[in-house]
Amino acid sequence: MKSLIRSIVNPTDLSNLSTPAYVHALRIALAAQTKLYGLHVKQDGADDVSGFPDVRRLLAQWGILEEDEPLAMIATKLGTRLENVTLGQRDPADAIQQFLDQHVCDLVVLGTHGRDGIDHWLNGSIAESVFSRSAISTLFVPRGARDFVNQVTGNFRLRHVLVPVDHSPAPDRAIEAARGLVQLLTGPNFTMQLLHVGGKGSTIHNSISNLESPIPITIRYGIVVQTIVDAAIEYDADLICMPTAGHHGILDAMRGSTTERVIRQAPCPVLAVPPHSRLLLKEKISE
Image (cartoon, rainbow, N blue to C red):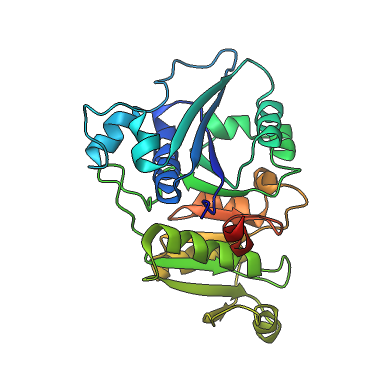
């Protein structure tokens, strides 16, 4: 059986602030036994960076690999292939997009930490072009949020998942992607809560009627972003999964979309799933 995630890409500015996102990407790659690309684009005038994380030290710290074992054992023993890629100085959006166009990828993992680093890459016109033609789900790991991968132990904390849903985009694929990802990482012992902000709750029920198993839906009223964030805090969510329209690209967030504003205030990582995402599609099992 092939991995349900064919590869993961972690664009990074190589700063220490990017480490939590890399930790999430690495831990998911280990669970999925798939390839992980660490991707860096050189930038003029960039500050000194710490370099790609020391994978051997992390895996030894997590008790997954012995300290004296060669890095080649990551592939042979753990089934995970790692490749760090540094692209020459050029427009970051073009470089990242070209890489995604040329490499099979089902999940991008991004750290967000203000207007510096990776957020600076993805600001303005870059936000309009990166992922604009892709159907790739993206896991955002906000600075200051509670991570669902412990950087010290490598353990997962994924007990509660919140999925905000609306009439459009259709939430089915995002729900299944979130459920598949969490089951892959931690097994079946988690709860998922759907949240709709506004009226017409019966229509929402109808739009998810084809799911394999029923999921409770909470209907609330108020300012959408704040209501989602408040619900995530109240629910003690470890992950928020946002269905995205996709036609403006996942990172239309930087222009003020609901998804982006949730990411900026989220108490936990946010998984953005476009309507044509291939993340953990069941039909891939037979490939």
